[in-house]
Length: 116
Image 1: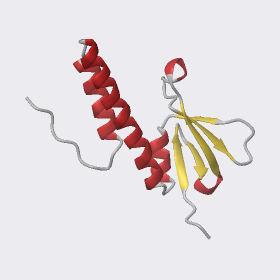
Image 2: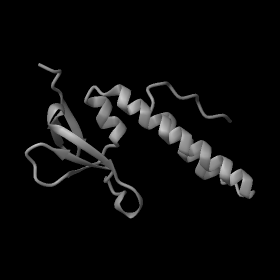
Image 3: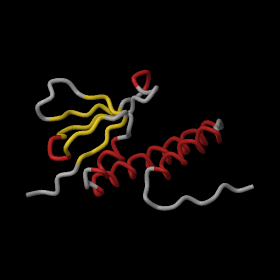
Image 4: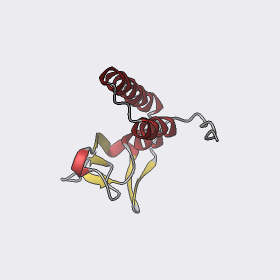
């Protein structure tokens, strides 16, 4: 029998890891106020809106390898945005710093302390 875990979706919602069959990150106007990810659960007709990111849910499910691919995708997207912004001559360091911190926070590696 596979390793079945209870996975927190946030706001007191839990699902069995072997019943979760799809995750969809929310973007744009859909995201915010504790809404991060749509979670499809076997036996539940509509997706549940989780307050946790898909990476965190995947890790809690024991799917570290799948979560790492997503982190790589986010890092590549960040690098692409930086390159495009630099080419256009309008680099928003505040936005890039926020995005970089989010990518770092989604990894299991400890973050460096902020520089003074």
